[in-house]
View (cartoon, rainbow, N blue to C red):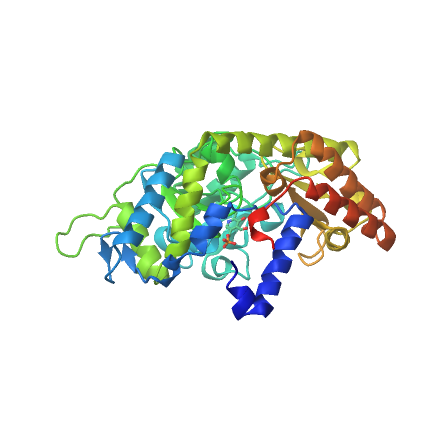
Length: 432
Ligand SMILES: Cc1ncc(COP(=O)(O)O)c(C=O)c1O
């Protein structure tokens, strides 16, 4: 039964329309997914009512016995999923988790090396409009112009020249497997901490379909809502706990604090107040789902679908950065199609296909226009698309790109997309 239908019809309608949009359109945004009904249930639970500043058994509030259990379960499951000795499930978002890493490992003005935004990096990896770019001395590496892949020799040259205090490895639109071991060797040579931001491929990493950053990085962050398929949020992990190298000691005993204690205190009280206990419970549900054998099957299908779609796009004359993909996403340079990223995104939207414009390496257009699009397979795989369905996906994208400005084509594609999507029922329990 819907309470909103009786108490707030305006918002009830808005949510219904959004549910229908998610069901009827082809969802190709690489950073999105469809969380399970169980994850949604936990997110919408009474745990939203509870204040629980602090950590399990060390709260500033009473009445935390059950939320403590939820947070312990989330941490335990997450540790098991990634083989991490330390986990923090409180960051409200990926950006907040990343903020905690800066606040822990570097001081304002320190040099940090991250991936160039136009080459795949995230806003929090040094964009001038983000706190990272404002507070730190950011330098960047990119991909090789010919291969479209990270050139480790170039990263090493930059690291040795710039001597950053910290190196960030990870991206929002990099389609290839990353060699974390090689990055650690570079970081050690340059005397830098190594932080992996696996927000995008974390679901694939969790089931060992991509290289594992945990043994090689000082610290790892992720979001929980992309390939991990949980609620919107962030996490912080370390493979092994270690004594902090910053001389931080416990005030009474004088004991050197462990990094786990330092990171915990940077998240709360350093950055956040009360944790979102309903979201933490939903994270626990999602990590539990990710520990099931079906999650490996799902991620294998994500990878297979992305690989097949990439192959079909190349066959249709699209220029894929690095010529393919190892993970769930691909980045397409539209220069040869004479279409900007913005035009493509708008045309797709009008045709029932949701994806986003994206800068491509060495882009000559602004972030508001861009020369590319990014496509991800995580969400359509959740609703049941298989390799053979990629033919339909590639065909409709190709048709729209070949007919920019043709409203009749948009309308035809929109109706075909809706029909096709109806073969893959989604959230049937949520629709009236
Ligand atoms: C690599 C990377 N890091 C961090 C984030 C930030 O996550 P959030 O949007 O939850 O703040 C994103 C989001 O797209 C991302 O791609």
